[in-house]
Amino acid sequence: MANKLTVKQIENAKSKDKLYRLSDGGNLYFCVRSNHSRSWQFRYKRPNQDKFTYLSFGTFPDISLVEAREKALEARKMILVGIDPQLAKEEKKAQAFFEQNTTFEFVAKQWNDTKEGQLKEKTIKGNWRKLELYVFPKLGNLPITKITAPFVIATLRPIENQGLLETVKRTAQLMNEIMNYSVNCGLIHNNPLSGIRDAFKKHKIVHMKALKPDEMHELIKTIATANIQLVTRFLIEWQLHTMVRPNEASGARWSEINFEDKIWTIPASRMKMKREHIVPLTQQTLAILEAIKPISAHREFIFPSSRNPLVSTDSETANKALNRMGFKNRTTAHGFRSLASTTLNEKGFEPDVIEAALAHIDKNQIRKAYNRSIYLVARRNLMSFWSEHIENSSYGSFSITGPKK
View 1: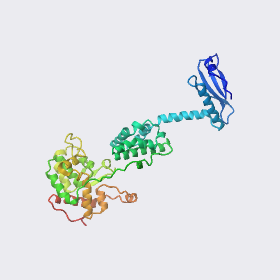
View 2: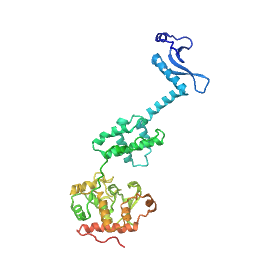
View 3: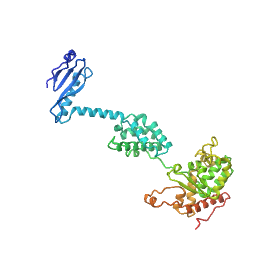
View 4: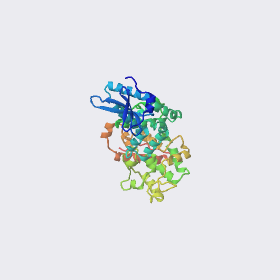
């Protein structure tokens, strides 16, 4: 095991016609080739084999004599415990290649591709934008195997300090999805971010602002006298009567209206819960359609944009108008749904019928499986009552009768 070579011997070793090796002891050799290349080699028998093989440690002078001896010592230790140093080197190289090519951003792109067809394009782009803004600058080039809770907490903490708690919550959720995807793909053994949201402040839930039932008269009177565009007025009235969400109302198409059966069918692609929704049309809602026909009957959308009539008006149009009319911080277009729900529950309508009218999906999976009825007949009665109630409210009187028996 005594070291035989010196630095001077190595530096003076010249190439010959054939390859030759100088022994340093301990199975370490200095190999000199005819092409003038000089390198370090370790000669050993692989575990459970009788043949000798050589393991390269690199070229000289990139690898010095001291470094070569250290590598030889490490190789001898591996052999003593039954590890093949050649295989260990290949595994280490493969691991380095794996980590270089499976960065967090690389895996995130693969995960993002799986969302196509599952989520709306707008949602996919919004999610990716959050990762671009808040995650990739610091963690994008980090190997997926090196992503840990402390790293992620340190990355998201500045966002929390800005008060963007909902952004922190959503970004942490997206990162968890990516890490779970990595587990399912066999890239990592477990998800180290599973409980990370508990490390941040909780976002305070603020419910949609809505008027009380006895404030209906003020709302109807204000809408009727407000200085707003006709399309906006019709949109607000349409949303109030039909109880749909703002984007469902603003995106209404003439092709979705069945005048003969008096129903409005909103396709699943436009619904929040991705389930087709049928809205019974009342005399009042049909009157709104008749009133707006001269404006948009020749177009695709019932409520066209004032700037570009080939597209629908923005879903925020009603909210902006309500704000200008003095209802800012009092109600929103979405709050119309809460107003309807409160009123109809007070009037004694069946909760299931009200939930069906609002296009809510039962969170109880067993009830959801067995309760598939859309209550169309009962909902016609409910919608007629609601439209009459709105109409009566415009005169300052309120309907006092409940559902028809």
